Figure 1: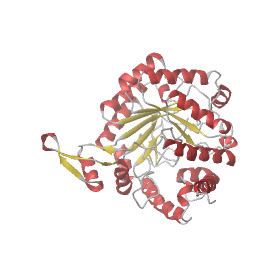
Figure 2: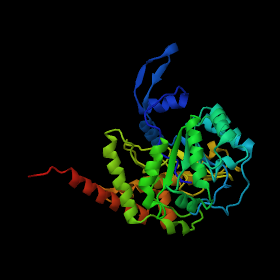
Figure 3: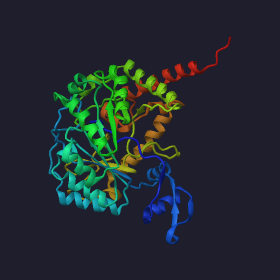
Length: 404
C-alpha cells in the first residue's frame, strides 16, 4: 500500500463549529448571514491548513488499525515485528470522541489492511456519525460483495484509496506475491465504481512497474478513476532497506515527469492529468508559513498499539494512548514540541538550497528514514529535483517560438 494519504480536498470549507469558526476568522473573510442569522464563512482549504500549521491545530489523523494483511507486498513499509497492546474498540471510540472534541476534520483508516481489523466497520460507522471526513486506504482485495455494500452504507467514505502496482497481472502480482490479485482487483474496482463509491488509485513507482506507467494510466482512464503515483520507495519503518532494491531508476522518474507534463498540456483539452504524490492529507499550502510541513502541527499518525507519530512517514514516537489521552499528548508532548521546531529548521535548511529547492519535494520523515536525520538531503529527493529540472528545461525548449 502506498504510504501517503494523498492530496487534500480543494475548494471551499464550510463549518459552524466554535473552534473552526475561530480558525476561519484567522484565515479568511466572512460572508453574509445565512438562515437563522448565523454568519456563513467560506475560505479555501489551503488557507485553513496553513493556519493549522502555524497555530498547531490538529486537522488530520491517520489510524493504522492493524498490520494484518491479506497480501504480502514486497516493499511493505510496516514494522511487522513491532510489539504492543493493540487499542481496544472502547479505546478507539474514546479516541474518536476526543478527536471530535478537538475539531479534527480528516480521518484516514489505514493499515496493514484496515478491513482486516475486526472492528473496522464499527469504527468507520462511528467516525461517520461524528462527522469526520473519512478516507479508507486499502489494497482492495476484500472490497467486494456484501462487504463493499456495507462500507458504502455504513461508512460512506469520502474516498477509498486503492493500491495499483502495475498494468499487468505479472507485475502487480509480483509485488503483492498473491497470484490472481490483479484480476481480482480489477473486478473489485468495477464493482466499487458501480456501487457509487468514490475511488482513487495509488501507485508507487518501482523498477518493476516503471516500464508500465503509460499502461497504468491507460488502465486508470479505462476505469474512470484517477491515479496518483509516488516516485519514491522508502525503507521500512524498522529501518530495513530491502525495499530500496526496487527503487525506480533515474530514467523511470524522468519518464513519469515527462508524462506528467505531457498530460498537463493535454488536460487543457480535457484529458486526465498525472498526479505525482509527495504529501499528505493536508494537501499543498501556498500561504507562506514558518514551517516546512504540517508534521506534528496539523497532523499525526497512530499505530495499532497506540503509539503516536508526527506523520505516517516520520516514525518518531511522541506519545502513547495507553498512557495519555490524545488531547494531553497534543498539548503537552515534549516530542511534538521538538518536531514542530524541527519543521522550522527544515524550512530554513531546504530554503538554503536555492530557488529550485521546492523541486526536492523534501520530506523530513523520509530524510530520517534514509539518512538518519530529518535535516539531511537524501538521494531520492536529489534525484527528483534533477529529473524535474531536466524535464522543465525540455518543456521550455519545446515551447520556445520557432524562428525561421
